[in-house]
Image (cartoon, rainbow, N blue to C red):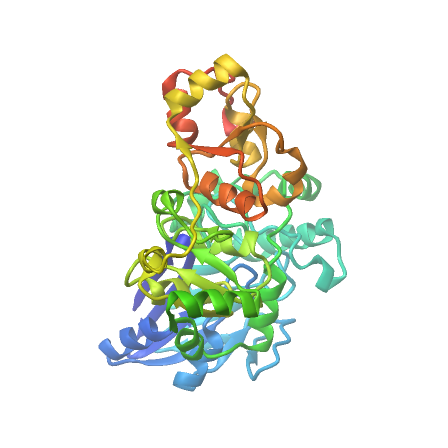
Length: 469
């Protein structure tokens, strides 16, 4: 028996490759399926099943393409209603894979079709669970994403999740290994550990939601407390996962069309495409196509695209570092953004060499910002998450979280300069690019973000541990 977690850090997502005696199961695959095919070929094995723990909201799964490539059936749990052929497993249904068995445990609550897959080894002993978004390490799946589809409140779903955990998962032995679908950084939970594999016994000790003496009322209150609105692209990804999607090969072919500067500009004007610059933030600040949006590949690229652009049908044109075009299109497609229609051939240097106008963002050192802020009381805007801001921030700074920047557009002054910062510099340049694309040019980005500001000696609030918020 072989179990491999295939973890994608920028999505905080775990897919799984399980093999026994030449038969393979893939659990919650990513959209690009070639790595699974290559791995099975190297093992001289056949992909027999594709298990989906639920209809994912934060990424587009590779189940449809992988099934088409291999002939392996897609398996969902009870209550699933996909538009394509699939096995809708009954609660407790058993699937033989070589010498091992995989048992479908219906665990609704995150969504009503959510299912945990229990793996029993060749001796019949419970070995591991693939818990999807039902159980994370340190947390459980948020119960608000499926409430509209299920015609239930988030409290209703949280109560159902409580029963699923208590009746199906917590009775399992402490040595059972937990393989979740996500880790820290995913928007599908709020309190996940940085680790991606653990034992159930340790989770019973560490996970607030698995306290043995916890009442249902306490569980509902704690699980629903502090939930931020989900990203707007989530329902669109659910729809693609339920109904199917375009082959990723076609998406890549279209998205990696090279366009010279004139064709690039003409295409942008004709289609209304957003120009998305995915280079390093320093390169963007030094020069970029006017009104382009910056979201760099070096950060949490795909989730930020989903949160800020939101409409998966939006046409996109890319400005990339050389050789990163296919990677950018692939990572966009993982979250359902299939509308990339080309990239700037030769990159931003070609744009400048063609004599095209370009824009810049002025970046100031933290020391210079400290001097200006303390002498002139210039406004400072902190685009970190609210929890980061409440933990510690520059005194008199205003919190305008990047996730919800559109809600704060009227807060930025029109008649005086202001400064924008995040933790280290990535998010603040995203925010600055959005503001500049809307005609706001009286801003300065703070190099190095809050970490640099604090080191410079600028006055900050007393530190509050984020876990107490």
